[in-house]
Image (cartoon, rainbow, N blue to C red; front, side, top):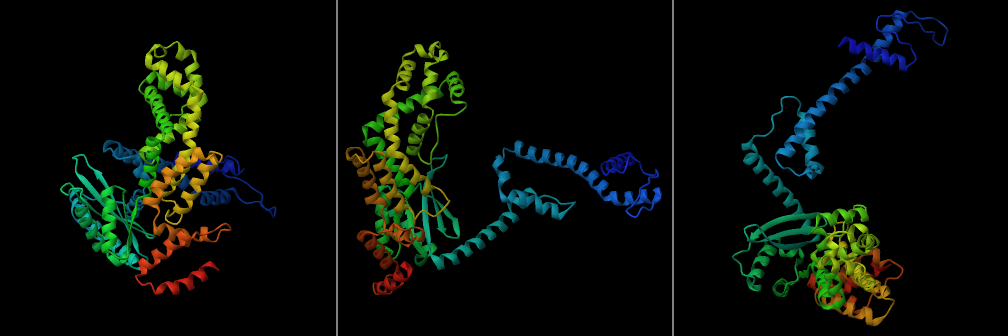
Length: 468
């Protein structure tokens, strides 16, 4: 250990241009006044000055080795127990180690029993406390009840209920709805009970999917609960628009089918995947989207991005000399890729779908609340589609009709009108205009939420202040 310390001090003295004297050797130096100091004093001063630095360096070497050992243990815990790596990005992961380090030596991690019983109960209490904080916030600003259904591995129908407010989204409960038939009456009873639990006076809207039985439930709910709204899920509604494009427009249906044949054929053969990656420089052709039908159009977009690479691939010697090129399926796929008409049709499909995908990305993300923007974004999407087809009515009007069928009947809601009108980012823009029908919906929304038509006059005065 002394040799290590001596070596570190010698290196430090060399770096500071004091020579290579080791501890105990006399060193001379002239200070600014020209007076010589004794080597012994200098040596002692240097040793005192550098002791902290030397000790720090030793600690760093020791800690580096120790950290490596600790990290190996932590990583083994992840690997051997099948824990996803993204767990290490959670706040709890870092906080756990900070607390353990603060405790110091002798810390014993919680046992199986502690994790299973007392600590679990404690966390349930903490979650209940957090939920109560949210409940108080709901009383101030209102909230949205959201429901989402899924099927587990045992084929049970599970319904999740979540409550959203500006404070955040909280999970309320899950209900095993396997025994509940999908009739409107029973679903209504279940959702109505959740509204009662949250508090009718706190609920602004209930969001479900757009199925016919849920639409009937929404009407029943609004009939009983006079102040809240039923709103269909915006992401689901836009996904249905994309589905209608694929099913009702022949060109879209055929083009998506051809695009799917290309990707399915290539990705079912390892040799073709390797050949594809050579020409696309590692890029893939399948791009998963937020929803099933969004994926179809995103994949078309990916094919279009790699158009040149795909054409080169099917013209290359590796393809023409392969056994795949001699098969019936291989010839069909090659003919599609090399067909100029196919690529023109891909572009036509994307002109109609991409503006809707932009709206879908907005409503499906958590970057900003979508309610105050969806009306504007849908209007903008329709304009972009018209412009993409250069104003040719025979090209864009059929697309508009498909959008309007869903937008007008399902998604165009009074709350969207209110969100649009009261959104400062939109309201104070230079081109802001409000149609009579939109303002009518806004007032209908305010009237329903207040439950008092007499307040409309007072709101009018406040709205004038809001405008100015």
